Amino acid sequence: MSSNKASDHSFFIETELGTVTQKGDWFHINEKQLGDFAPGLLKYISFSTLIKEAQAWVESASSLSLILVYVLCFFINPWFAALISLIFYCFWYQSKSAFVLNKVADFFMIINHTAFQFILALICLSYYTINEQFTAAGIGLAFFIVMKPGLPRKLWNRVTNQQKKGNMPLNDRVLKMIIVKKALYQPDSSPDELADMEDKFLDFVAKMKKNSK
Image 1 (cartoon, rainbow, N blue to C red):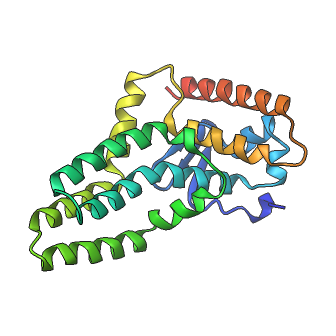
Image 2: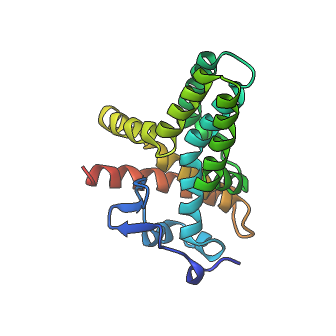
């Protein structure tokens, strides 16, 4: 059984309006607020674990797109590889909450890790350069520079937050699905309780988002 005593809060900061991670990703809820409408869940899993998994899913679009462009450059024209990877990024970043599954976050934490991405870039870019595939090397390097710090994510969040005032932010959508999936497998959960918890989460996030403006 998970315990809040074992929580690691070193990678995020909680405020009255939500939680922000060291990487600048915002979730419109904090531990106390989650405990108010889903108290049973925190008996089994810590709040920091929920945020850590949500962060992994949020970052996954950049990591998967980076891996995809490196792989495709071995087989097709680098410009087509870049185009396919960008299309995939747009699709996955907007739709990833629909694919949330337990345990997948562990895989994303690996591919999101700086060491993994540096090693992958070193191997692939070295291969392209040695084989005089300079276009592939240039595109691969450009993707690394842009995707590694999550620049598209930060720009996308800024634009969508301004344009879609009434919609739930993508980060909160991911966190909501993680909470629902975790609660689904707890021994004392029921369909009615899950539906009620999801509705409360939607209402609460909408309220917090409105208050933060």
